[in-house]
Length: 305
Length: 200
Image 1 (spheres, each protein chain N blue to C red):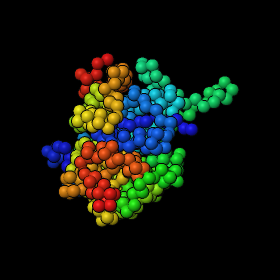
Image 2 (image 1 turned 30 degrees about the vertical axis):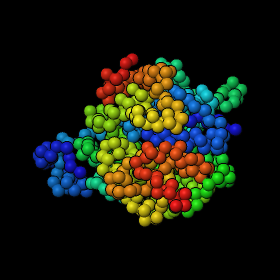
Image 3 (image 1 turned 90 degrees about the horizontal axis):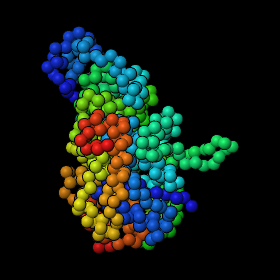
Image 4 (image 1 turned 120 degrees about the vertical axis):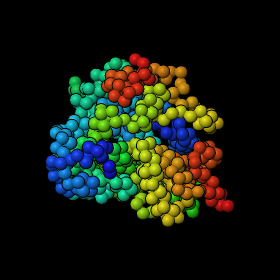
């Protein structure tokens, strides 16, 4: 059995606690009963749009610190955010370069930490290390559990729910890193949604950016919102009841941006919340009251009213 | 895109460069003194690939979602980088959403998104630091997270039966100290101007 450690990042615990609840519920004893631990010493991944963009050395140190925590617990990191995935995964690649690893470890020594990767086996006197594994929630669901197992846990199939899935850029690109799913024709999120009994609708420019990444949302919010508007126009045209994504930052963007160009908006939720709904959770536990776009229309449709 | 100093642009005389951005071609000429030698090397220093290998095919602009919205042309910015027209890369450096579409479509395998990131590295070292960078970095050294905790959300966490966020853990000051040691060691506090927040 694979051992994981939760990596919730910044947005979810501080803005969308319902997602944290859903992830814990789906992976916990009410759901798949995975071996997932908490680690109280994790910090921000750190966010690529800030730290990777302004100082790669600092970015690598902060990411390596998080990786060391998982390494020392001998666990795989379970991220629920595309940003955390991109940042930490890229950091493990950087640290495979002996020069980078040495440089980072010289500083990490000041806080009594050392990144080596997880020791696998010893070949004679030589120890073999593997980089810390950084996994995305979607990919863990699809690969480690499988769609049949996901469907088997569904107690309340989300029939007739037309869902627009949004993968998000850092799930798909750069393509050589996004090896777990087909970057040009990804399927995992669609298949999880379908395993929950819902319909994943096709819409134009499905793989387009939400507009928030790279600091655009923080820097020129109107620009980010205008990209989101394009996506929402296409999603509305496909007649979707809700937007489902695996990235809390894309979710935050869809959730906040919609009020700038539409009155009601399309409800948006994390894939874990969607799964939890299908698995029969009481929607009140999903923290939809912290979402700006009301999930009311969707929940009403679910009740069949 | 507008250059940062238009008065200075009007004085331009000497060097003719064709095929550049509109406001440059209108004037037809730019001053030699505006060319920063070895700008391409500087970009490489911060992790960008060699901009001189750019073929100017324009695929990057064609697939850039931002270029549809504002006057931002990835190809042009790479062109400015080739010539060392540093000041024309100012101002538009922070609108790249790092969606990496340009990278996927670049026949020269240049990775324009990483060039934009290298340009950001150069910008902050010249003191061009958008406020959101400082805010996020301050949050990190204070709370260990880039997003500032919200007491209203904490209440909802409590209602849902979730534990308190990490930064409220009695052991967390140790983590904050570790973060500050790292930030101080890489001189990031000084670079971004948040020294007063870092106490190591």
